[in-house]
Image 1 (cartoon, rainbow, N blue to C red):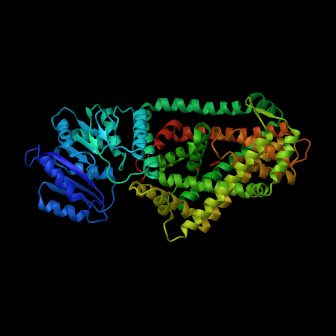
Image 2 (image 1 turned 45 degrees about the vertical axis):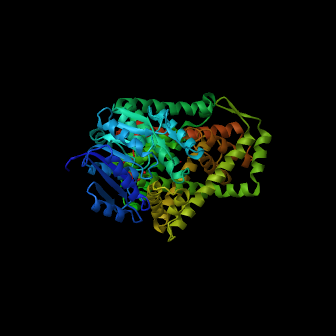
Image 3 (image 1 turned 30 degrees about the vertical axis):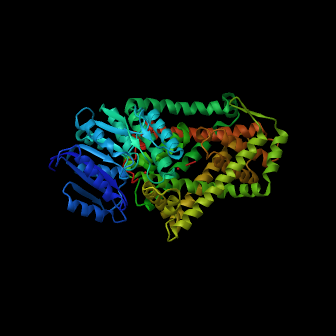
Length: 616
């Protein structure tokens, strides 16, 4: 590439057939008014247009050697199209502005000269600094101020306007930043400016006269999903990740695991836990832990079958360890962040892409919910539909006043109703999710693109739809295959049956005779308890599981030995055994696979190779 131009102006163009010729003409005329002949070029960065823009750009380039056309057969995204054109340009000062010429072109000389003179490395027009003259109606101004405020708050930017499409860069400065800029769409402008400030480059923001062209509206996919997630991603990369050294992450991970164990006691009142354990047969409690532990290799086998259907292989013991680590993460971190940990582990150790990792987790989660629903949720849905739950609620409320857990006084009747409604909703959602996935797998039309298209008309929607399609496609491959569905489904039923058997052994440890009726009640109680704790309202569902379990067992039995305090003790020991086995297995697996929880969480946030971007 010969660098015989002083200034390269890039015009990002997507379906601009009606305006591109006039924009190029105005740009050439303006540049010629203050730059020497032959000192500049205008590049049309045409981004996979579907109209006559490519033809027009070709003609303009053929007619004037100051004009170049950089063509793309497919849609790259605004940021990526700009980056490609800048890399192919020849100027030392690189400029771009929006082709609608919303910013008055009388500011072009000031924009160029601020960088060309060597005074600044980056210059950007601004609609929000003092002296700017911008016609900003509320539908544009309010979202713009909110967005720029979030960028200033989270990314520590000193600028007031990050998205004004009127910017200039020193060539060396921009090229030094581009390798770290990840966004390929609308957030590209903001990321470049933020990274330039962090790198110590001199950035000038000056007022411009700006008139909106065309209509604008809030775009759910672009503005909320796209821009919002990119602010979070950049904040993590620039602020959090640099502080997460291996020593810090290992120390923090160990502390968080201990904290999870402490939270178990905090939520469930230490004295009650100790008294419950003291009243149980230690040998049988130990036996329950062994039975529960047997379910974990089955989880690994099931996960292997899911991945195999997605064309990826994994050893059963490795996958079992990965599940142990992720479930320990769900006990430690909020909002089930442990699920992302597993996606990271299989990506780092077995090169399974993030979309496939998350899709495999979704498959597993769907089958877990289906198995739980089959075991007990169907009865629950019937009770809710017929109003039968009121009998359970009345029975428990009549015999019990209030229950204190972790210093909080709870109303059993209210808790019963809430837990059972949540569980019924989750059970129905699992059934509907599978139905939708199976129906979509058999449709000729693309349901994902139809839904995303209804929410967004922006180019970012293509990016998002592509990610979702890969994710949903992987889920469909398992759910829609009869053989895979049967194997994974049966495996899930066996896993959750062992979960119930663990609870039944704990009943026996408290001296309760196990009858066929109690077995049925236990299946129902464990199922509803696990459905109720799906929502991440407390660490590991602690409190939700015990509450639902206790209410159902007491409400559906007439055994005088099964008092509220006894059943609460059984539920506490049952859940504690399962959580302790999980944490112990997680610690062993972390040591075996050399994985730190906090490192895994931080690195699972970095999905740079995701093309575009759960266990109970």
